Length: 335
Image 1 (cartoon, helix red, strand yellow):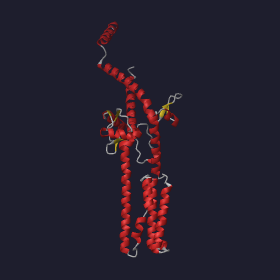
Image 2 (cartoon, one colour; image 1 turned 45 degrees about the vertical axis):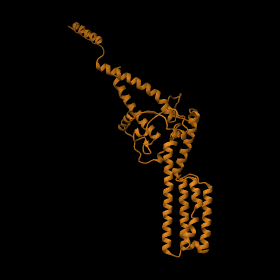
Image 3 (cartoon, helix red, strand yellow; image 1 turned 180 degrees about the horizontal axis):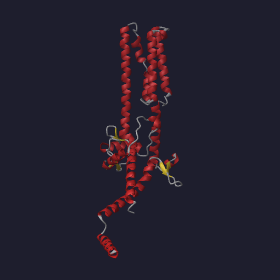
Image 4 (spheres, helix red, strand yellow; image 1 turned 90 degrees about the vertical axis):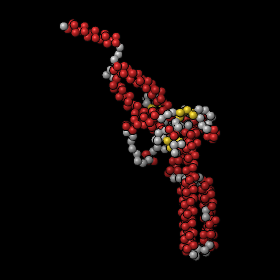
């Protein structure tokens, strides 16, 4: 009986072999092939991805490490080096502006001091030598000091340019001294004049903010594309951030789906933009801001935040890595 059972099993095995692999075996084989292809693509993509983040493979340890400045520059062509230097200087200036540490041009301080001397001379002529202890004189000096400090703060934070600061410093309130303090004996007139000063100061602040926003938009639409092509350094210290939350595995998978569903386009810049950024007219490869995920689109969906885009790709790589690990676990019992 045992002999017949063995023969039966051999016949069944031979019939199965001749019939070919089962659907389950075909699925496993296809998954294995896909896994090999994916691993090959990852191996090709990994060096460039790490290089873009400033890392290189250490031949001694086989681990990725942070590049030195010399190594990073050595791997760039002249255009990339130039763009990298510009971006580094821009980021350094941005960080100083965030901390309020931008230098103030000595010419601005000289103009502020000159304006103060002129103001004091006119106050002395109008109110007498004791103007510093008089109510209108004290109020005028306090306002002048507050505006000078506000101007310095704007310059240190990059809210206005040095050229705008020079204009403000030179203008001071010289043109308004005689008009504002010619008839200070009237309390009603004083109240109206002080209100005008506050309104004018608010208008100047609003104009400076609008100019700052216009410069930011201009950079995002044109300048950012040229500078961003060679490399990217972003201020990313924990000290500069708040509301920090770790991205979950589920969010990684959702971001991967967004990457997969976002079209990649070939394009040329329109002639006006190409001329302004020094583009050579070649065809480019990239995202269209209007079609990009909300996580990377910025400035009213007219620009792409390269730092956020790298973070989305980072999350996608993590999601793919977990998927690969699961597939390996499924395949190991088979092989």
